[in-house]
Amino acid sequence: MTNNVNDLSVRLSQAGIPLSEPTTPAQLQTPWFVRALQAFSGWLAALFLLGFIAMGVVFLVESPAASLGLGLVMIGAAFGLLCKARGDVLEQLALAVSLAGQLLIAWALVEFWNSSTYLWWSLLALQCALALVMPSQVHRTFSAFAASLALYMALAVNAMAPAAGGLMLLALALLWLNEFRWPGRIQDMQAWGYGLLIGLLVIQGFAHSGHSFAFWFDAQSTNAFAWSAPWLNAVLVAFSLAVLLYKIPHSKTHWGLYLSPLALLLISFYVPGVGQGLVVVLLGFAIGHRLVIGLGVFSLLTGIGSYYYWLEATLLTKALTLLVLGGGLLALRWALHKWLSDAENSPSTSVGGHGK
Image (cartoon, rainbow, N blue to C red; front, side):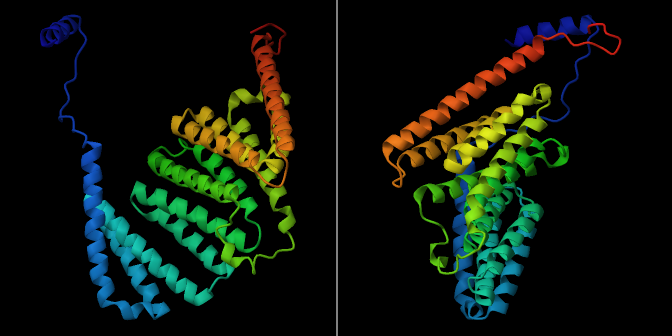
C-alpha cells in the first residue's frame, strides 16, 4: 500500500500537480469510553466538592439573599472553569458547579415569589441567559432544555400548558432552518436545537401521560382564556409547517402546498402529538438530519399510541379517526407529489415568449 501511494505521488508530481503536505500532525480523537470515564470522574469530584461546601454553608440556605449571592458566585466560577477547560473532567466539574448554583438561585426565587408565575418566567430568563453565555455545548443543551421546562411551567400555572408544545415546535423549526445563517455559531445553534427538541419530547410525555408537571398548582391554574390553549397549539403547529414550507425554495411551485398547514391544523387540534411529530419528521427531512428524523418518528409513534389508548373515546371512534387522518395524509402526499412533478415537467417561458 505504501509503495502504491509513493508511486501515485511521483506520477502526480511528474504531471505538474503539486501535493501539499500537512504542516501539523493530525490530532487523535479520544475514544468515547475514555471521555465517559473522564466525565464520570468530573461529576464524582464535583459531588465531593459540593458536599464539602454544603457542610460549611448550610446556614446560607436559610437566607434567600445569601443563597442568591452564592448561586451567582458558583455560576461565575463555572463560567471561569469552562473558559479554561481543555478536557472532559474540568468541563463536567464546571457543569456540576453550575447546576448547584442554579439550584441555589431557584431556591432563593421560590422563597421570594413562592409558586407564582414570576418564579418560572425568571427561571426561563436565567436559562436563556446561560444558554447564550456559557462556553460549553453540553451546558447550552442543558440550559435550552431547562428553559423549555420553565416555559411549560409558566404556561401551566395559567392553565395554558397545551400551548407550550406549539411554541417549542415553532422555536425549534426557526432554529434548525437557520442553522447555517451564522457560520461562526453553528455548534451553538445545534446545541440549542438538541435542547429544545429534548424539551419538546418531555413536554409531549407529560401530555401523553395525562399528568401535568404542575399538578401541585392546580388550585392556581385558572385562566379565562384556558379554552383557547388547544386551538393556539394547533395554530402554532400549522404555522410551523408553513414556515418550513416557506423556507424550502422548491415548495413555492404550487399553491396547493399551503393546503397542508390547514389539514395539519385540524389534525393537531384533535391529536396534538401526531401533528407535532409529523412536523419534526418533515423538519428532519428538510435539513437532512437523521437524529431529528429519528426523534420525530419516535414522537409521531408515541402520539399515535397515546391517542389510541385515550380513555375518553371508544376504540372504534379512535380507530376511525386515525384511519381518516392517515388516508388524508396519504392523499395529500399524492397530490403534492403530482403537483410538484407537473411543475417540474412544465416548460417555463421567458419574457419574450421563448422557452428556457
